[in-house]
Each structure stands twice: as structure tokens, then as C-alpha cells.
Length: 379
Ligand code: HEM
Image (cartoon, rainbow, N blue to C red):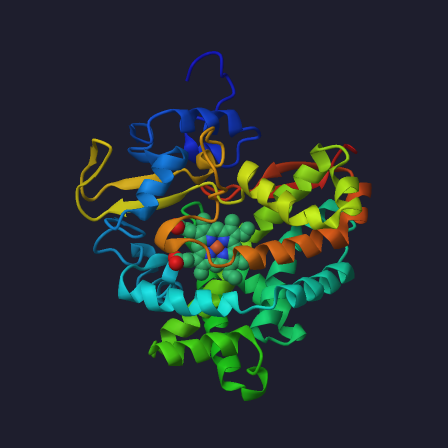
């Protein structure tokens, strides 16, 4: 790295949890849209053009060819879920379930979700940094569990299992975390299967809408439906915690932002869109080339990994959209839901947060930027 940027992250995976990575991302966006990174031994897609081109390319797949499930998860409860997730599949195994999930999520009454989340968040005001760290994970998961049709008594266990389960998706997890993820996967599969058979819980719930949509679309694999219902919790977990945490950071670092939002609450959606662009929770995703591909004269051979640096696209001087919710076939169907929940939490917690002395670092991760708060200075 040039000497005039002494504190730059060493590569895009280190940028995710770096204190101030956005000049670096801006410079990545200024460079070639596709380049080979020798330090990571993989390709990088950067800036709006690189990110969009790779995410739109049919030969750039979410999994390496012939390896639908990572070796360490094969034949396990985590592997059984992983194998079915729309997020981890292509072609028919992706298109129909994706359509069903996107349709059901699109039917969610966002005003009602906001009102429910506001009520839940008001009951759990974070009175300390430690409590805030738990709340940014719990509240979105409680709101999703409620939406799915689970009774309140089940939410804490579901949230804890979801947090344990997502450890199987991170290369940074140790043996104990991977073992915990398997226990959690089994418990989640069991709880969702039980809810599916509890007829009382169904009408009006998101679970009901997904099951009805699956029947209508001819998506009959019940294991696949249950796995993707678990997937709705796991996709919510870190991404929405990060959005909430990074929004708290914005409120703490931008003088007057909270008072402006109090005066004009209709600006909350724009504020969260700006956090999602400027300081997003998901910084990168990966694709694997199934055949040789060429982008603007750059040839990437088959069998290569491409780190798609989503966060650099949000900092592209020529960019025009906030792409941290992805793009192309696998674009996130949960954006409005995440924003409704996050708006409610921040509205409920605004006053309490203002009084909390906070400092923060970031949870170790190669793709998600989630603050860990500690008691610190008043800012
Ligand atoms: C701030 C919160 C969120 C962020 C930043 C986020 C981000 C993303 C991103 C970047 C992707 C695409 C990954 C890729 O292409 O490799 C994605 C996919 C997905 N997200 Fe989200 N997400 C969020 C919340 C949610 C929520 C609340 C749900 C569920 C209600 C959800 C459900 C999904 C699903 C099912 C996919 C897979 C889509 C597919 O592969 O077709 N997400 N999300």
C-alpha cells in the first residue's frame, strides 16, 4: 500500500471490520472493475460496474461447481439446511423457491410490522452497552419469529439458536462454535416442523403464506420449505444487527441527526438507506466461475473465486444505487422488512441511546460489519 495511506486495510476482507475503510473502498471503486488480488489469491469485483457485472453473470455462481455444501457441513443438520437455501442454489432449485419467498415477503404488512416492532423494542430499552449488543440481534429476530407465527415464549430460544446456527456460515468459527451450530440447526428444524403441524399457528402468518405459495408454485420439497423458513431467520440475523448497529453509530457520530429525525420522522427510511450505502452491514459476497467468463476484455478462467466488494459500489463516485442488499438473481428480498424493523427499534431506543456513553469496535467477520459496543465517552 502507498505510504500516504498508512492505515489502509490490507485487503477487502480486512476492510470489513476496519475502523475507517471507506476511503480505501472509494479507491477500489476508482480502479479496474475486475482484478486479480495476489494476497487473497482470488479475483475482486469492485465499484458499481464490477459488482453489477459479476452478480448478473449466469456463469458466476454462489457455490463452486460440484461443491453444493462445504466439506465440513456435508451430512450434518447444518449441511441439510445449507443445501436447500435459495441463497446457496442456482437454476430451478433457486428460481421457484426465490419467487415463493419474495412473494410472501412482499405481502407482509409493513405498517403492522413496524407497529409490532416498536412495541417490542419499547419493552426492551437498551440501558447499557452490553444490553444494546444483545438487542441489535434479538429485536429483529423476535420480530421475524412473531411474523412467522411463533408464540412469544419461543422467541428467545429461536433467536439464540439462529445466532448459533449462523456460525456454520463463517470460516472464522472454531470447533466449539461449529458443534453449537449443529445443535442449533437440529433445534430450528424441529421447531419449524412442529409449527408447520400446529394448525392454529398458521392463518395470517408469514409461515402460512410461504407454505401456501409453495403449494401453489408446485414447490413440494417440504425439507426445502422448512430449510428456507430457517433461512429467513438466519438471513435476518447478522445483516439486520449490522444495519441497526451501524445506524446507532451514525446517530452517535452525526451531531443533530437524532433531533432532526425526531422533528421529521418521515426521514427515517432515507436515513437507513444512507447507512446501508455509506456504512453497510454486508460488505462483500462471493461468486465462483462455472466456466471461463470475460468482462470488458478481462478473462476469468473457470473454477475461480470472485470476492464481490459490495461496499465499494456504495462508494463509487459514478454509482447511483445502494447495492448492499445485492443485485441480480440473488438480490435480497428482505430489504423493506429489515428497514421497517430497524426504523422501529431506533425510534423506540432514541432517547435511551442518547444517554448511553458508547465506544465500539467490530465483531470478527470476513463479510459483516457489526459493531460491538462498550461503555465509552459521551459523543
Ligand atoms: C439489513 C439487512 C439485510 C441486508 C444488508 C441483506 C443483504 C443481503 C444480500 C447482500 C444478499 C445477496 C447475497 C448474494 O447475492 O450473495 C441477500 C440475500 C438474501 N436475503 Fe437479505 N439482507 C438483509 C435482511 C434480510 C431479511 C430481514 C431477510 C428475510 C426476511 C433477508 C432474506 C434474504 C434472502 C432469502 C436472500 C437470498 C436471496 C437469493 O439468493 O435469491 N434478508 N441479503
